[in-house]
Length: 306
Length: 123
Image (tube, rainbow over all chains, first blue to last red; front, side, top):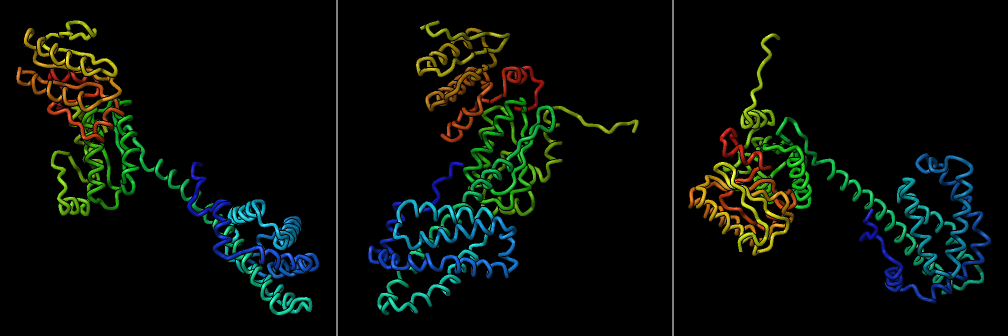
């Protein structure tokens, strides 16, 4: 994969910028540290309550299939509570948040479950903040806001890495589709056929041209059929790409026959004023093959004994 | 100038065959043109086959000289056939918008000979 640099995934430097954007300062760090004793005291109970809650819904229950997984996740959650209030929000913290997002995407946990988990925790945490006799209202507000900020930062990282992971899958699939969608097949001695599926953009044209020309030389074929049955619609750019390909084939000493010109394509070509008059075009690959065989002086006959 | 670059023009019956070396310099291309035209005059050849299968790079000077040579050969009563162009060369030529004028292309020298012996319909 050479798509490691996604537009969605921030780097650590950007994250520092994001902290500034949220106005996450040393003051907030101090407020969060005040929560640390609570995290130590209540983490077990909060985490147990959360998983009890998650187990009530079939949608989330399926991720907690066995006792081992459940215990591992509970431990991870408790560790998270410790991290969240540790006062250390450097690179290590950043990396661990990114990993969480990628792991969630990999197991297929929907982002909504991840997001609503925070909401559930807040329900449990808020009474502890405001019900604490050691905090005056101002401190309680400060603690609450600091917690809100760090959670926002965490969520942004996890969601970005979610999207990044999906983005990578899409890029890989796009490449695979590109590979698959331009096969070149030898269909007769001296005839190759290349069905185009989908739109022909400039990136694909380059690849398509290379494959077609190489196949023509390799099989020593004087005729190449380019079938455009699978091209949904044609525009001037696509037509130009086709014409370029035809010219390159001509330079090699081979000839192109365009097949699969459907009525809608014929209409569009005329309306756009694209001139293909120097090029042999046929409505079906079968009729194109007949032209090709004729050019090669090959006669196909019915077997008279059959 | 004669023979300086080991460029040989081979006469085959009424056709001339030239194998263009890999990465020909401008002087070689110029020499090729002169040699070919003199040979056509000498042998009254009907055709010229340029085998460019070893050429990996086609620049605009080369393309223009081929196009012009084709015209000159035509003026002297001959048809030029370019044989064995590499796919990468064809792609570059298309991208740069280079044209070979009235020259006909064929996949290899065999097929070029077929054109002159008239048993090949693809012209």
